[in-house]
Length: 430
Ligand code: NIG
Ligand code: FE
Image (cartoon, rainbow, N blue to C red):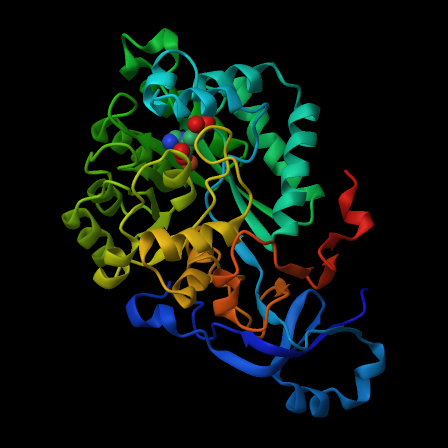
């Protein structure tokens, strides 16, 4: 059994208390539940008590000697960051396409000429399980260094069963072996394979009748995602795929209105998706439908930045009552980053969100987007001992002083895994 961890005397301790039941909306997204000079006692992997340092020292007076004390004075303490949308498991990189885009080629042109998702699919198909595991493990280490303690991971670089299965099995092994919690999503519907281009419905049939039942049988994923986009999957096909997943217990998610408006937000509300992601081109009608149904908008301003597109209208979504979360979209084509704090900065500068709103979006609302609002995303008694300590003395400075990794200490499941910005050695090895 590990020693208890006593994080003491934070300049600001962001608790987000009272947010476990439902994602925060509108003005609630500005209520951080800050405790000044705050301390947290973590034991058996869970938050046991939280309060001012004075209160906590009194409460634990008899046991102070037992604890691993982490001095957080002058620092910001938040719930461990949660990334609810990544394509974590992939092989290779695509800097050649980055260069092509800088010279005028578009993301969809590159994809339609056999690059893009197809290029990464080829690399991922030929990589071994072990190679994919090693590459993705290193990415998880980078996530941890940026203060992220839970990561959602999608398949989708397979386009046939064996590779989809390999990706999901790698994600499962990462969840078991890496300290970060990895939450799996099946995204067989990421692109239409070339051999099905003349008859995409045949591929949709394969997804529905063959792959989804196998994912469910082998318990390889919790969620089912689809790239609903002009030239990829139509709203009608997307609906069939998401409803089929639902019949097998997979919760729907959707890549919606990313490149062109396609009524993806409306579809997310109609099928009762837990989240609709991207939404750069979402209609107001779609946003309102999402607000009504409580569908979380997972916004990815790093993708807009990297594709040189206008970001989603996060400000409008918050004002309309859509619960907003933020994510890196970490993938080799449209957002090769693990820096959720940088994404939060883009949330402020490119989407008009406040520093308080982006912190909610990258913690508790992100947790709700992956059905984990009851376990992570806020610091409350009984929740996981997942905590990030930043080397700034207030939450606004985290966004203001941008492009710098302020992560100082990370506690995951009640264990210190990053200290002084460095991974503890035992977690850095695979
Ligand atoms: O979320 N839009 C589709 N999928 C990813 C990009 C994947 C890639 O380019 O490899 C996204 O942007
Ligand atoms: Fe994505």
